[in-house]
Length: 508
Image (cartoon, rainbow, N blue to C red):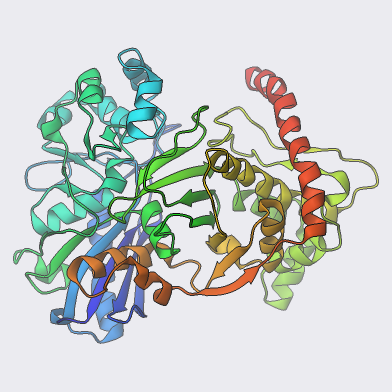
């Protein structure tokens, strides 16, 4: 049997290619970037040909760096950005630029669909709110504004699926990406007839749905040299980036949860059934683990709030860190440690970019609440970390109120490196947090895991325990947790009280 897996992670800024061996060890990685075009406010597009170039370049670089022979590749597999719209012709070539996840232009199409099917029905069928963030309304925007392209589209797919179509000639997707379209029946594992009918979408223009672990084709001889692998190499479809990150974080069974801390942040679980929130605050994706669902809640500005704090409040730390050749965040954490849990009664609402789950309020604004002449910069820095974590707890509570039992919170992403912030999370969440050995490769690792299971190189998804071990566990401090339990309802009350103010500011 061949010994290596190539996993491609088609992210927003570029493609990361990784090479894993049969023991689950990362052997090599390569990155190739591409650009996003913002032609108008609310628009965000990328060219699928740039994705293809990045996949080819990074594959060649990966094999050259590692010295692994191309005929020793057991499979190629994928993770990719979700909620996009990529119109392809019958040859798998794009008919226009891809409308990516960040694009919000299709609000008119969202309203049009809402006139034809109840938003509540969409939520309980798909596990998601009806939203211009998802693929359906982006497809309808193409229909309304570029009818020739819509009519000539053979299949509408996602980023990873467009590369698989070009590699294999097959037009397929998996449950995780399908569930990010507002068209997928999460329970039936099929395109929803009710939504298709309401939106007047032809199901023939949608890809076939396969398990994330399925081998969906082989690399065609006509493009093998361009890609840099042997013709006939099996291709495993893999999953959307959020679901692959869940697998890479070890969230592959019920009771497990993970918290990704990057510029944005989310909490996601693994459950056998969807978790529906009565107020529609959280949503559900298909998992890469067959038969599992990934309930999720996402906030807009997590690490972005701390970055703003760095840029606007911490010039001293920036300058000192430059001279010491360390991260300014290390010095900010030391400064925040001079404050106390609760930041001496100072709260920060982390809504620098509006808010998605749990608030779903694009008009929400950030603010410090309770600021007095006695507060220090240390209090302000600490309040930002606490405010982000309080907001993530709102997501967590939406799940636990539905009876979900979570043993501990696994942490991945760049923000998970901060031991100081890890302790705040443990204290506010009221549970142990587990920092994993590999924090920023979890997404490509999850794709590699799906690929390895798909071709039999790995026995099952429990292989992740060997691939990404728990490096440390941070337990809550009973004393500090008690402080946060008193402040948490105050944080929520502050948001509720300011909602009318946010609306008035938006109208100015």
